[in-house]
Image (cartoon, rainbow, N blue to C red; front, side, top):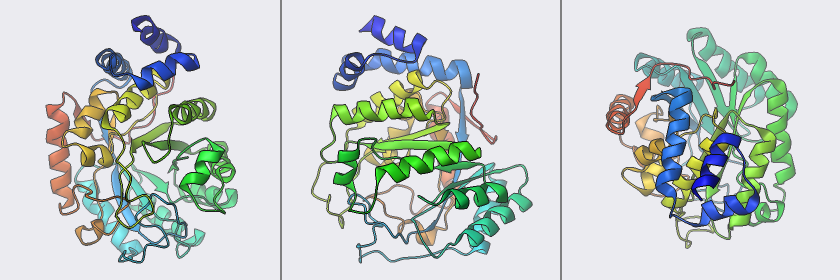
Length: 344
């Protein structure tokens, strides 16, 4: 197994059986994490990039079985932020050292292309040294092109799973994996820095599904890869299932760092929710991005993708200071930088 991990580091690949062995056993986690950390330090040093997350709408047209803001959840108090409210979040974030703003929301038909473009161009005009990232789901290629022309340069769209049959177990009829994959490749062709990713441990997931995800990512070659443990939300069809595994999530972060050494990989809020030191553990396993929340405190607990989400009551400055201390204690440091991927 030691030779297998070293070969994975050198070649950024391994055969299916080797990857399965690494996924199902914790015996070699310490070495796996150490090798992953060495790779990220070789490329990115001990720098950790911060992204200012602005969750600007919790309306969504979709009805994904795992998501707390799904269309059929009538217990959610819905909200939308205005362009001025979003700009106010950016102004506060800029003063705190953020140089990337991530506009994330449900697939909300209220925000037509023109409105998204206005929001993006307004942010770019006021903060020309910053990057705007969008995470607003599946749209047409024409929409993506318009967002790019308006100044957006990154797009996050988790594929959730690369297995067609399993995709249907997580989503209602009408949502197609084929379309999600089409979106990801459209975004790449347009020129976006693209982020994909998947959940770890949702109901019915197998090791074979995870292997399929890794192979799909090899085809896509995204700039960013976001994974996190599945966490239940009480008002969804999956509320009675068990949360995903912290250890398996960390193991996958390390594998992703070895297979995609130049990728930007976040230590997610979900990791911090499942374990008090989850984000620090993610950094030590190879992650190099954190995404503190810049959303107004009054709406943070309304963007409830899962239960018990952390940091919903903290002001932006509190989130930033808290994360800086945590990152420093883990042996890394936050940098004020747009944090582009470092390709060869």
